[in-house]
Length: 359
Ligand SMILES: Cc1ncc(COP(=O)(O)O)c(C=O)c1O
Image (cartoon, rainbow, N blue to C red; front, top):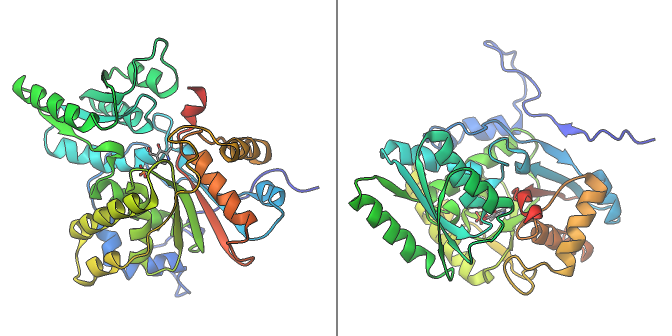
């Protein structure tokens, strides 16, 4: 009988010693030491909200349910142990450090009523003893659930606006009012998708390559673009051919790609230590599939429902309805259509958000 315990891919299989015997360097360390830019990324100030690598695991039962084929891995950012985890925690480590460096006393951000990013921002503020104002588009819930419940528990001051478009203006207005009241606000754009937020994911690529050889394809959910910009940048800077396939949760591919290119250019400025890096990033491929949004942001589709059930029943992994279920629906569809080669290694980057199952 197959061993039911999933094999966890080990990070850094051999401890480093002071005087190591000469031996072949694992590929990841070659990349790290020969590419000074990763040193620049690693030295960006960071608040240690649950640092350390997240597991990389095989998905043998899902792979079998899909009829076999490429090797299938998952990177478990859903397991990050701070405020229910997810990709926003990686970004927040750097963004919160920047807020502290600027002596901010109030974090301001926005999102939907069930925003994961808002939950993580509120959690960072609570942990650091800062104030937090969230601008949410939608109606105040009568009985808050999931992220809305957690944001309240975390003590955030939540303001509601009618539309997504109204959020940015309201955030500016809140910041102005805070300044007038003698506070030092720090405004975090939607999804913390700034060059600094993206830098967190460029660095996460190095974390991955210390665990496994670069996969052929990474599939993940994309929305405000910071995660994808970082993954694309990390792979480009490491000089690997890994294809990054972002599955859109809402925006059309063209709009999102333009935004991601802007983030890549900002990230190049942030980390440029050698003149060729900005060009490397500008030329990087940005692949987005917007064919799994269905009727809109957060609205389930038959494929996203299938993905949630399939992952739970084959691997006891939980996907969220808004982001990761649609991303996995995309992966499954590409798998069934034979987009991936039999010899490929396909990695699903689980960006968290599972709190959304309880909304
Ligand atoms: C769970 C989850 N996955 C993926 C994303 C998309 O990441 P990004 O906004 O960096 O594109 C989000 C964004 O809100 C998210 O909450």
